[in-house]
Length: 102
Image (cartoon, rainbow, N blue to C red; front, side, top):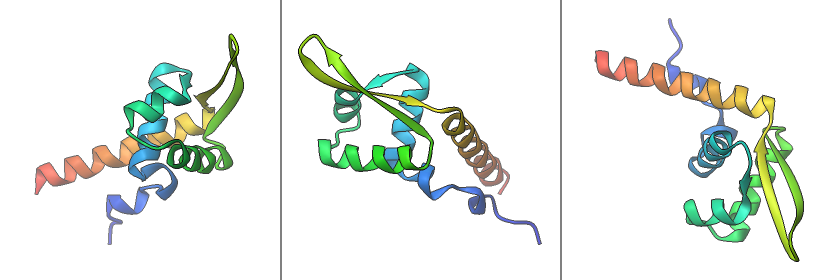
């Protein structure tokens, strides 16, 4: 019996907000925390928790610094994060193809 494509979904990446964080960060190369908070319509606490999960999984790098006198946090996707995102997209494509053939 062939495995269903959904078995390839990664729970760490597939969660809606985490997928959004990885996708936006991959597109932008480096994204500011406040921008993600706004674009994903999350509270700072919720976003921080998702960022922590992705960082602990080695998928996201967090850089803290200053823009003038304002503390800022920037996020970048790691090589492992790009691989995980690409794998997730491949599974989603397989699901779409399977659905279109049904």
